Image 1 (tube, rainbow, N blue to C red):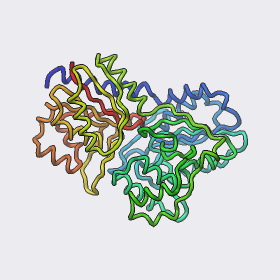
Image 2 (image 1 turned 90 degrees about the horizontal axis):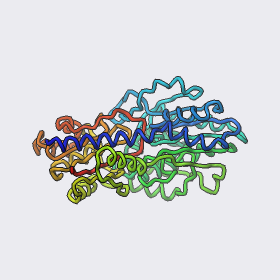
Image 3 (image 1 turned 60 degrees about the vertical axis):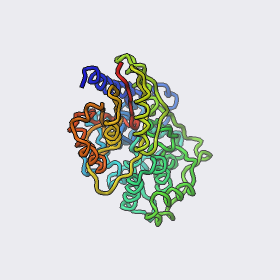
Image 4 (image 1 turned 120 degrees about the horizontal axis):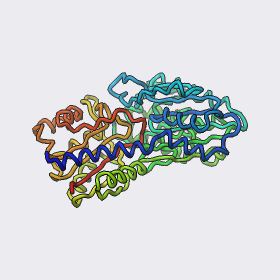
Length: 426
């Protein structure tokens, strides 16, 4: 591999890290609440939930610490207890400093009993508020699994089976969360409803490409314009074997009923892409632009990345926020959608182009890495049969280890979906 190509790979990883650092959740929340000082009236209770919950809670305490009466911060459990539960929040030495907030941990992406415990604690904290009080909700991606409150007649096992069927069947996250919102006692604005008559202010970090507030972690504290009929159609389309759950679907909080509820979006996948593009220009001298965010089938995304790679001029780079879907068999190896896309593309890239595919939370599926950064010469370390077998078995983690193409950030405390960078050496 040439020195120029190796330097390009390094530049892509460095820019990815720099973009994440600029959107530090604690700093984003602290600045937002400094500007919202007038909203701090009455008793303030914080409920932070998601992969960025600890950082967001830390920012709230920096800004409003003396005015926060209590609450909780719910994030992802560590260590992982199954192949599905790999999105582990970074160890936070400041956990004790988050008092008076109670730190709770639960499973992701499939909820567990701790998810139910956390949801019940959140609902109880909201219900204890009165007129003139404020529920400050700090919501980031991942909270759909971390806060699970099945409605009457639906068990935790039912919810686990449903979420697994939707995710493994390749449903877009908007459809997964559509069903979740209508099959819950906490999602779809119901946590905000539990806080009535208190006011609700929600600060959001979005992990959903093109997502609206109700899409982010199934919108526990924001109104939802979708209907039961929409959720029913998605349930029958994506998980027909679980259609018996249909009678438990119910309407969510509607905009007309949410006059005391406000929401602010602090960061999303597009903003991350903009920061990464700026870092590529500043540190690597590349002419970097941001392309429109994408979602959809991972195989189609591979073809689009290769077409883009062939079209780039020397010294150009394109950054794309991306939420791929990848239907998975019950029996599969270790890997993730970012690594799978990179492995599927590596042999067909132009010889002077690098491709980075990485998860912003630092955990690409069960791979143990954030993703991969590949160039065509790297593929020489494995023969075609080995690469084909890894793709067919969704076992890309071992392949990237052999190729030396893993991107290892460790858990980042972020969740702004996946990011792809395609760049051509100058």
